[in-house]
Image (cartoon, rainbow, N blue to C red; front, side, top):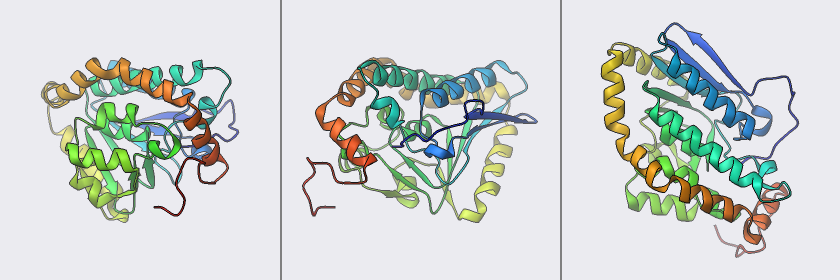
Length: 269
């Protein structure tokens, strides 16, 4: 999960570039490791809605600027005075995940660097996930006093439950090969082949008819949409409640101070 750094207030944190029938949506907040601040999430929601309404757009490609794909939630919004910040952030994230899953056009995620915590919700909401071999993943929430409630909304329906239990409970780093094995990503390629693999995936999708792609995506995402409908509100409330707990306060503070939380047993993994 990411700590915020000062940002240029006039600089968009999410940018969309149209390349023919492809909308390339970029998280462009490298100063805070592309953390999911409220402006970033709002920008992504707007980008998905715009893509949905543009008949010329057939495929969305999700990319990130900088060395990290997404560092999860924004620490600043979790440590602001009062209890409203986490709840607003969680509700916005739920809206984004629903917008991605219900978008009637396939989303291809191009993943490089690190993707952790709530950022994995974006990966779970994408239809094809192409990962460079050196990328790493992690449901790191328990290590700062939270639960992966938001990320689980789109990843739990995709993972086998034994793999999910290990990943969610331990917070261990998952390499790209394991991520592919457990169903978190679609394809792993050598780093220098990442762009070529994404281009091939996009070309393959553009060879399909828009209506058929929309129907096929709806068929594939039905379990995720059902999971969002059934558990979305409860997971939002759980995540927001844990954010205001003493354990999370200590965990987030420790993360920002680059130290071990007081509740973590020392000399362990």
